[in-house]
Image 1 (cartoon, rainbow, N blue to C red):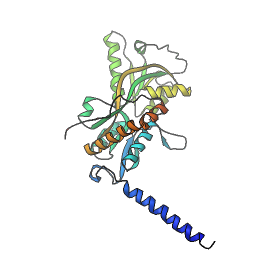
Image 2 (cartoon, helix red, strand yellow):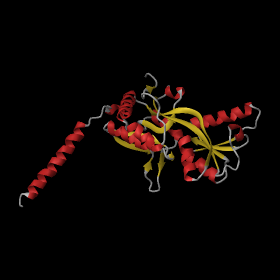
Image 3 (cartoon, one colour):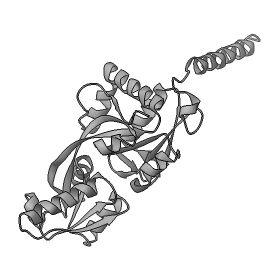
Image 4 (cartoon, helix red, strand yellow):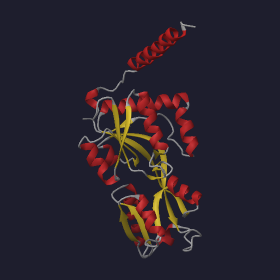
Length: 276
């Protein structure tokens, strides 16, 4: 019986050494020079789009894209760290080296790919939501004529809102009264308060709010466009693409997307961005 403490000590030492050896074996393929902070994957996120990225009642950051970022970081042997910030500051912040990656489901455009290394991974589109019961009887884009619409400022969604407005005026119809907000949560709060008549967001978020019984999604599937991660550093972007493709190969990628009812892009994840 006197041997038991010694045996326990040896066992504990074995576990400690094994864990240490495993940590040493996990060497990141990303050079420290490619990161804002050594050993850390720093990602910006705008947590106002449930179920993709949001903060729960306990203040915990959650959502599919949050989980995906954490999975990538683990495969790169890096510690994930999130910076919560409005979308309008994300691209300038990336260029200024405040974070390594924009992880907020940024819509892919050729213009953005000239500024950043972009990795398309998710198919997404735009929805229009209104009050429960659809009192305005909106069934087609033309029914938005003359309506007050809320949208997040400075992104793809605002651009598409203005395209919708132009489509209406080109047909000789009255345009929309466009109100911009710092984030999507504020635009939906404005809809709830009756300050706007409709709100524009991504399909996944509009579907989530309808599922909760908060608002009614009256139009969806507008302007289908892939969303992406965005990185400044080419080495980091290449390592992320490999991690994502490894996840596609082992099924963990599809499993996560199925859990949230989101469609991933077809084919391999590739990097598109400036050569320099």
